[in-house]
Image 1 (cartoon, helix red, strand yellow):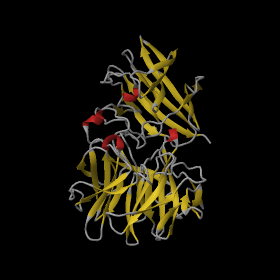
Image 2 (cartoon, one colour):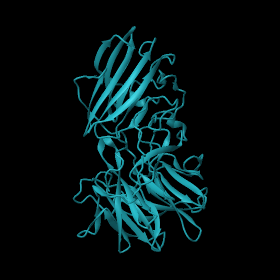
Image 3 (tube, rainbow, N blue to C red):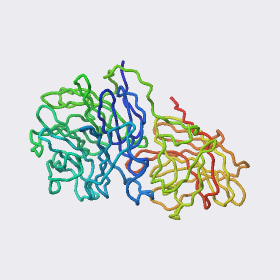
Image 4 (cartoon, rainbow, N blue to C red):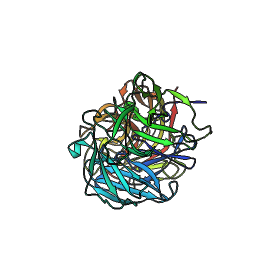
Amino acid sequence: MKYKNPIILGDYSDPDVIRYNDNFYLIASSFNHTPIIPILKSKNLINWKILRYVDDKLPFDKYNNVCHGDGVWAPSIRYHNGYFYILAPFPDEGIYVYRTNDIENGKFESWLLIEGKGLEDPCPIWTDDGKCYLVIAFAKSRAGFNSCLGLYELSNDLKEVKSDGYKIIFDGHDTQPTIEGPKFYYRNDMYYILAPAGSVKTGWQTALRSKNIYGPYEQKIVMAQNDSKINGPHQGALVDLEDGSDIFIHFQDLGPYGRIVHLEPVTWYNNWPIIGRANDLLLNGIPVDEYDYFIDKKSDYDIITSDDFKKNKLSLMWQTPANKSKDFYSFNDGLILKCLYDELGINALNKYPFSLLTKINYKSFKVKVSIDANFKYNNSSCGLVVMGKIYNYISLEYIDNKYYVIIKEGSFENKNDNIIYKEEVLSNKIIFNIDFKYPGIYRLGYNNKYIKMKFEAYPGRWIGTKYGIFARGINEKDFAKFKYFKVMEVK
């Protein structure tokens, strides 16, 4: 039986994965979106489900507002001495540690380990002599430089930095520009660091190795695009299987679809991990389109894409673009969204912190959302948005005691959204529609009819396009009831 890549056509950027007994756990970047750091679970590496999130909110007040592209960058996950550790870098604040002894149901305790700007992609390793180290990369936009890897010495419980700052252990400016996303491993009496270099869209996978954790490190490119269609291929995780073999999980940047997840075989050659299909000429790997299952185990796990709002709690598919600083939703025979006022006084929907957004999970799909509006105040609105650096949304808006269907366009660069379509309707009950087709062209409509306009989907800042629902206005006594949110794949 063969699987096909990607194994997850969803924006799970910077995946890190561990095996614990016969379960696999994947975490990913969540940036400014909450709840933070999704945890996915699989039994066979192919079928995944969203298990939970690490925390409900970002641990800094600035994230009560929308801060596109900030927040959690490239976390890592490791298990040591009875605890699961997740290290989460905040590029403007520092490195946080989240810890639990029960990855599936336990509460995470958390603390700020290292304060500072520009520290990214942390990954710990515990050595046989009882020490603990942390490898990091650097964000040039904050640290002033990149293309280097640094090393801290930590206490075993990751609560104390024992070294006097970090030491640069690898400088990739000449051979591995923009090296980042380092992941620590120990094998064959050597320390390995697997890290992508050369940029997200056109780079490659590099392996470093040394008998001394401080180096010097030998280097080798172990996977590159070569003759495949997989650009990147970027940051990921080396995972050991119960039979002693290894696999590699990484992402590919697919524009509006985000950073989707691929699974690769690993072959060890001269103590180097060759990732993907072996290339005899270059002695590096090529990403595979398909491959044999590594674990012959059936699974019904799947990524949630629709919500009928009948469970009286938000589905794990939903995130907000900022901390949930107010009670803006409830349930009563559907999802109730209050028409909260945008306290920043900004008309642009991309700055509104109370939208509910979800990831794209199909190349082509249709969306159908049923809404009942209960408006009495001027300019209350509710609707369906396709969000990115440039975005469009369709809304039902209450103006001078009349209801209108309005389509607006906006961008991260502008403070106001522009009306490009407006039509009066006679009912406060409406169905909104999206028809989305690969490679990212979509139409918007209502009551199962599409308006004769086509739009292009754009990624956000470090993320793919998201889409979702909102309600907003000048008085929270107004509200919109969402009866269902249905997503249907189109093949």
